[in-house]
Image 1 (cartoon, rainbow, N blue to C red):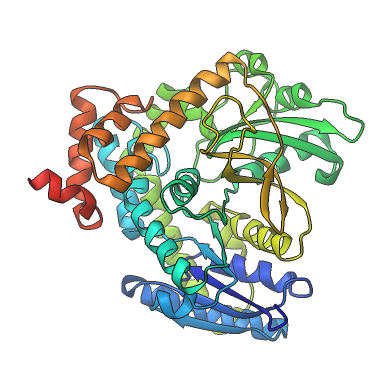
Image 2 (cartoon, rainbow, N blue to C red):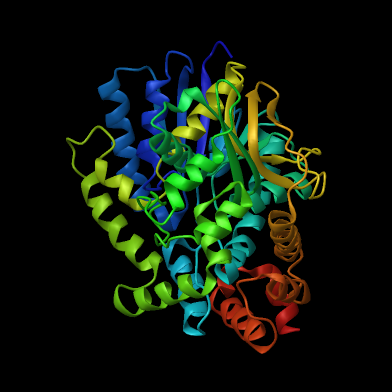
Length: 444
């Protein structure tokens, strides 16, 4: 790769792109990017032009030799790429708002990646990601796909299982936040700790050890969840509801913030419904935040990532994506928490499924650290959720209505029976434009 690295970002008009560019700039000595292609669709043209101009200013201010290209032609961009990152949202934020508000209107959880809304995000996203993979097979067959489009775990599994593309790694920012929280509680630098994560995207647990091999998990549980503990720092888009200390202590592992939806469903639903009545769904809040961010990005003097981006949610995603690419390119062996093929690292889920787990990142990809078996409390929920993911992915690929209904019925956040079917039908109708795989069958 003496010519330098070519990176393509699909969803280049995203508000996260400045963080991605910042991550590439600070690693330029190790990762000599000569071409960065930002790709979007016609509906995202304006945002692509705004954020693309800012990316060019950032590169110029950094004084690095990197060309930034903007295009609406995905195939033009993908030719001979070394790495492809994906950060798109099919249907834009209006689709997210429907995913949240339609379930909430029926008195059930309305959330971007969990419950009915998360499943519909998968239904819309998976066909698109599989189309990207087909283009990559033709135009850049040696490239790595680094995905942080949600739901990241299901998207990664779809690429592995149905796309037949092994060079894929999925990424989420939630483990990064968990590492920072534990480091704060223990008052120890992150590099002095070892974090052993395992589960699936937005449903993982983790344990923590120090350099001497002493386990510190229970100490962190006490520091975050004991009755007198300071509230945990949670990702921007989840209410900071306090877990039941006795229940988490019994797990002997730290849950992720999204476990609140499963361990405290009624409380979270009550919070969501109250917020929905006042400020709107989280998607509506994010839409307002994005509008103000893009106003900032238009400033011809802005040539660095603004602090306001942290309020958007998803902080650290893009920087972590840069580090994965850097570790593959330089065979660094960096320890990271990623979505990758299980390969037996967790006994309790299928060998060929995607899991989210602590892994070593080398030139050949992610090598998961063996975890073994979960205790019953974790295993039961994990297996139900993994089965739900498998059905959701199958429905996204086949457009089979009955499979989608089965996935809805299995999801703990969707009541079964008539409500499940009503919400499924309403969401199908609301997203009809982006779900052609379903509608030949529904209309028939």
